[in-house]
Structures are given as structure tokens and as C-alpha cells.
Image 1 (tube, protein in one colour):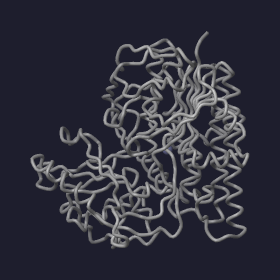
Image 2 (cartoon, protein in one colour):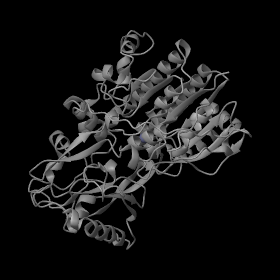
Image 3 (tube, helix red, strand yellow):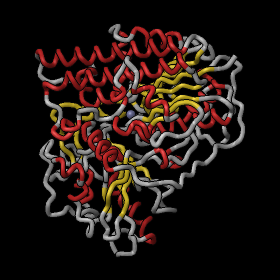
Image 4 (cartoon, helix red, strand yellow):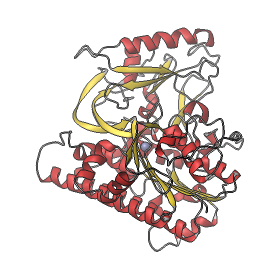
Length: 525
Ligand SMILES: [Zn+2]
């Protein structure tokens, strides 16, 4: 018998929301899987962000190894200024479980993962996530898959792409009367991915199938406070109630999607329900570039303007780094999602940090960050400031020099402001380290709740469930406590390094679509 695995990725799913929803009867199918399977928190990457986290889930390697830290990475021009490049599949240096399965004569299907475009040539099927629908063809493998999906009557293939018809809204923000349409768009997209996955499992099932439903992350970025029973959603009234109802309905449909996927996979399949990171409320805004400015590392350019909530115009999204005077700045944060500070290397033009001064500069900055107190309450704002060990060796490595952990778990703001910390009027949703793991199927134990697992453990787990030896350079461990007695890992060989020399930059259209998507999710404020 062939061991089959289905991984259902629920982007941003957290037990903090799912458990109360289970108790309310909104998630009957997921609740039955949790009762009949194994449940644990799943700890995310150091910066709990979609691109590094899914890449770690599917490679079993940390960001320092695979090289994906964020959606974007900064690049430096000769005049000392900085621009942003888009990370794509060619920036991932680690081998995926899809490729490892292939080398062990098993086929694989990977649907809606960040950073699978241009599509890898695996034996099986790939549809990349985070690709504008006009460019979906490049994110699909084999090439004939595009025409097959385009011809489907059950869904509109454009719903698999990013930013469908929503582009202008991302810049102006979503108005209250558009909330229902926005939530419905997530319902439609998750249903389309579910349909594609079920059809592929029915038509030509591969041993490993993995799909990401990204609706939970999108919904929670905008409407978290309407779902978390511990959050104040805003003034009571019919609008608040209507939004709550729409959100609950989203989770009801999500449960239906999981039910469909598990049914299509069949009872002999081992199913993992995972998330790349959790979610929680954020109550304040931390203006990190203003902190750098107040501490002498960054100088605002003359045309920078203080953030007055939603003041970012289309031009500034395109070129929001134009607010920084690059001739006078040595450190900066390029994107909120990085939650990181980059030290600008001196490229021989006298602007930035010289290699000999690097260690002292980064250690001094780290101490200043940890010593920083919110003037309002006298308490630390940065709970941690992690150095990247690789940076000392290479200025080319696309990693932040310092990755921050904010006290409310949120992402920083990169905008100008006269204070470093500002209270939010209402709580927003933000990422959290604790994601979810549910294991269900013939090889999993039943009715067991475990201590937290690590996202790096998922690759050894999936390979073992497939009967594939676990390469010895994977960083996680096989969580045998989740499995029936007697199941253990076979270790063998090493992963294959992926070196892709063909590396033209992502098209301007793809880049802009990604920036718009990031703006919409609050990653550009
Ligand atoms: Zn995510």
C-alpha cells in the first residue's frame, strides 16, 4: 500500500480563534478531526511571516538556510540609495519536500504556496500562490495545466491569482460598504483552491498533496477583532453584528472546505492541518524608522510626512523608501513584514557601515533597542532583538541584521511619525508565533493533545508518513509522540542544494501587484 499525505495549510490559523469557534459549533468537521487525531501548537519561524514560514514548513530548513526572510529584500545602488527586490522561487536555496519526494520516486502536488513562481519542474503539479492572475501561467507546472484550469466550469481560474479587480481598493483602503465583498472574495478564492485540489486528487492523485488556503490570514488582518471573543470589536450596532456574522460564516465555509478535501483524499490518507503562524491582537503602532531617526541612524528626507493614518498615496507605496535621506542614513527598516533593521553596508562610497565597524555598531544598536522604554508607561517595547549570525560573514545575505519582537507581537510601521509608540484606537489583527497542527489519519494517534511542535518538524513528519528517508541535514525532528507506536524515521542522504543561475528580476507588474497586496494586509504602513 502506498502511504499518501495531504497537507491542508490554513494561513494564519490559530487555536485562539478556532477553539471558541469549535465550541460554538461553527467548525464541526475540524472539531471531529481534533477529537479523533493529534492536536498541538505549531511554533513558527523567528519572524512569524508567511514567506519564511511556509518555506520552512516545506523545506525543513530555517530562513538562515533557505534565504527567504520576507516578501521583499533590499538592494543597494551606487549612490547609497535602496530599492526593493521581490523574492521568488529562485531565491529559495533549500530543497523542498516535493523535490525530495520526487527523488524517492513519489509524485507531489503543491498548490498556492508563496514563492513557487516561476513554477519548479517537479514530477507532479504546481500552482504558485501570490501571483497576479495575468501571470498565473508562469506559476504553473506542467504548462498544459493552465489551459485545463482555465477551461474549468466550476470556478474562475482568475480567482487563483492575486489582486483580482481589487487593485484600487488597496491604495484607498477598504470602505465599510466594501467589507462584505472583500470577505466574499476570500470565500470564493478558498473555494476555488479547494475545488482545484479535490479535482486533482480525483483525476490524477499524487502521493503528496499540499494546499494553502490563504483566506484566514486575509480575513484576520482586517477583521480580527470581530472574531476574537476577548477583543472589543467597536461600537455595538447592526454594522458590527453584520460583520461578525460574515466572519463566522467564513469559518463555517472553511470547515466545509476541509471536509471536502479530507473526503476527496480518502480514508487511507494521513492528513495534516497546519498554519504558518498564529494570530493575535495588536494594540499599538511602533514607528521603527522614527526610532532609528531619534537615535541617529536614519535621516528623513525633506519630503517625508508624518503618518496621519492612511496617508500613503499610490506614489509613496511605489517609492516609500523615498522618505529616507540615503546619503545620511546607515540603518533602515524596509517593510513592516520584515520586522527587521538592515544596516547599510558601505559599498565603497563612504555611506553606510564599514565591515570593521559592523560588530560594534550592531551590538550597540541592539542594546539601545532593548533598553528603550515607552515614555508613556516606562516599559520595554522590544522584547527581543535577534542578530543574524550569517550577516557578519556576508553583506549580500538578504537578511535583516536585527529582527525585532514587539511586546504586542505586531509588525512595525515604517512611516514617519514624531513619536515612536502610538496607541491604536481599536485592536487590529497581527501574526503570532503559535500556529496550529492537527494530525489525522491511519498513522496518527487518536484524541491526543501534545506540547508545541516546531514548523521545522513538519518536513520530517510528512516524509516519514510517505515512507521516504529523512535527509540528515533537515533541522527539525520527527514528532514520534504524534504517531502510532513503532513508527520511526529512516534517515538517509542529504538534501540537494538548489542553485538557479537564471535570475532575471520579477516583472514590474508582479512587483506592483505584490506591493498592493502587502499594502492591503497592512505590510506597507
Ligand atoms: Zn501567513
